[in-house]
Length: 107
Image 1 (cartoon, rainbow, N blue to C red):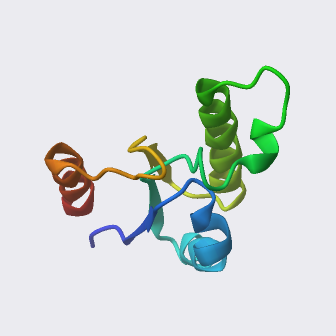
Image 2: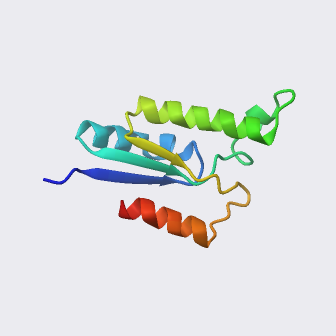
């Protein structure tokens, strides 16, 4: 019997939590290996609170968002979380990124 898998593709690092958190937890509980792909950290459009901190840089925002997403994935007991870092406003999905995503889907 092959393993059961589920894939969640999230535009921003936080989207999967409030858009699919319940589905992720449910599928994990049913024995699925859930993989989450975050196309962007949401560093521009969803990180206003972090940008207000003194001395913040783009890399600090991305790091904070990654830690938040990793903690959320762990709380949901997700099997894997991957970060594509394709930017935010604009999120740029070039040919290489599309092929990378196709590879994840195939896996």
